Image (cartoon, rainbow, N blue to C red; front, side, top):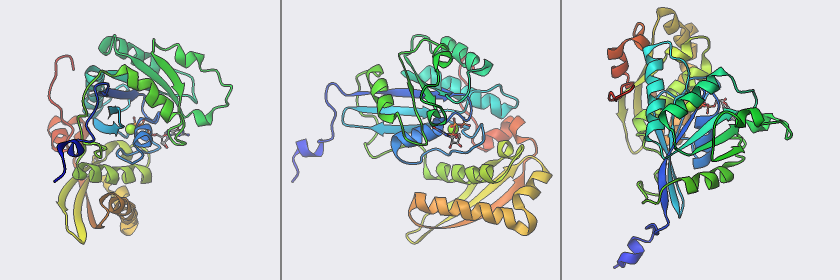
Length: 312
Ligand SMILES: Nc1nc2c(ncn2[C@@H]2O[C@H](COP(=O)(O)OP(=O)(O)OP(=O)(O)O)[C@@H](O)[C@H]2O)c(=O)[nH]1
Ligand SMILES: [Mg+2]
């Protein structure tokens, strides 16, 4: 029989650190890409269009001496719809709950008014919390580019350059974050990389494919609901509904003689098979839910609902 020491061999020592790092910034700066790069696996969807992430999602990084709970958040922007307001609420909540803040900036462009509004929000909701500034997309810059304008945005503990797509600056980033976290235990098993369940990840992967394959307002108006998720040893059967806000959008997603939905379906199926490591049968439908982004009840139904908190 194995002795207790070997059963608990992955136990943490007295100097083990753990805590929550809120990853915030404008839309499209690379927050989700960076979390995937840190974890070495895809737990969050990434697209070339802004406002991809809509919900809070944990990326769990575990090493021998630490566990960092990275909270992926929606990009902070001025909300135009109830959905936008919900997304801002998610980012605000993450700032409040965090032990430390990782503020991602796009190194390839100068800071603007929206960045200054984020600095204000940090002062308001995360005063006294340590901030690490990461100038992401540094691969798009010359080595001698001057980052002083970015670094002047707020008081920070540490500022560094990263490239999430090229996986540069990741170790330095982890080294900078670690001492900012309190001493504490491992909250999740070492092998767990996210708190999201497979149903959620499946819906997100389908939404990612719709965003990638469409343009104009469609990426912002789409929601995906999994209506059936039946796991089998040989094959997993998934049925999903893609919701849009207008009739014309429905036509675009279905495409000429179903060409677009076929393309979306086959791209999503291929990703789902990699995620689930089993053959997948995927059936997609498209439905109209007029102006769902401004309708609280519809949003709730689509999973965009959070408990009301003071100050939101
Ligand atoms: N060149 C370059 N592109 C990057 C880098 N990091 C992310 N990107 C690209 O930037 C785009 C947006 O990346 P996301 O990770 O979806 O950005 P996000 O901040 O999570 O965006 P939202 O969820 O919309 O707030 C994608 O096309 C990424 O491939 C980087 O370091 N360098
Ligand atoms: Mg994102």
